[in-house]
Length: 195
Length: 266
Image (cartoon, rainbow over all chains, first blue to last red):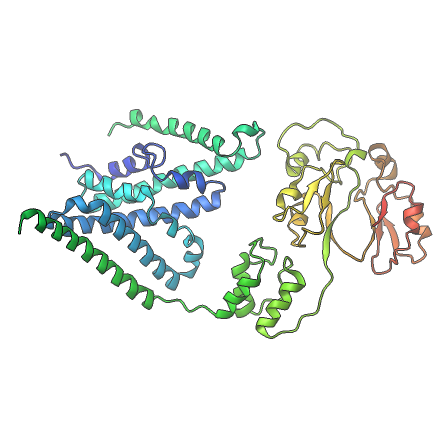
């Protein structure tokens, strides 16, 4: 297997394997927290942070505990345990030491402890057999891709709340229509950048 | 022991050990990083309205409670909770409070359907958007646009746009937070005390002739009210009557004399 450059992995995580609209992971927050840009940005910040942390921790767990003992089939359940505990731990530390960050991120941290997008990052890392740096870069890239789509979606939804549209598709149906068009735009990256 | 049994025991041990290690780590962390919170703050949060409207000037109810306890913010700072909440906070902190009179938003425009439209507006249903298009569709650029920016600003559903295309205040729901007043792009809304019951429902500074052309109920600056007021409480400046609420006794003579029915008693 040819080793991929870190930048290629980054681009892949942000655009080609975008978690929200190519892989369809983490959709509850995609629809739930995109009513205004401010909360979408807060959520995205928390997701970048947790994804990078989860990629780091799960790589160490997988390489140094699960592989030597031959228990790689336990990866899913042990990742869930470790990520949830890690997020909880980070919440404690941030609350104690950086209260201002806790106030802006705090309410979103517990929401993403078991978000499927976070779990998706670590499972994809394992499947792609990434090394440590590659795993961390892919984790951050996935978070950045999530942020871009969340901010785009939130901006569009914020503006489209002024538009007169039939009441039958107001609200969630409208959000799904917007998501479809966003997804179409991103799918084209498959053909534009061949990695 | 068969290999299968060993296998099961091993995987249980690894997962159990992992869970135990993580659990112990969390217990340790929760002890070490415990944040001391002032019980007074929690107590105050529990009696605040919890709408997080920001009318106190702080970022939500929790922040307000924190400032009251730690930074001597005024205990009457919550306009939503009013006297009841101020009394409650005073009870917790051992401070006395005196009651202040409740205020409601007052719509200083009577135009609505009485005011002619210059053109038909099609677009965003919002006062700010309407005003961007050559000061709005109405003949009068001072008045209420009736597109409900204040209605959407109200977190308590106390405002509605009525049949007359003017906002109406439901005093039972209004909490005097003032968000509607700051949202109005034309400064039509102001606070008025409950006891002040005579008001000029116009904000137009246009000359009488201009007002008469576009609005049947606007103030034309004729000074009849100024001359007839026994208390000299009314002054007309820039073609608009202004009532000095400290002098007004609420006799209602101006209401009867006003040729345009601009002055209203409630």
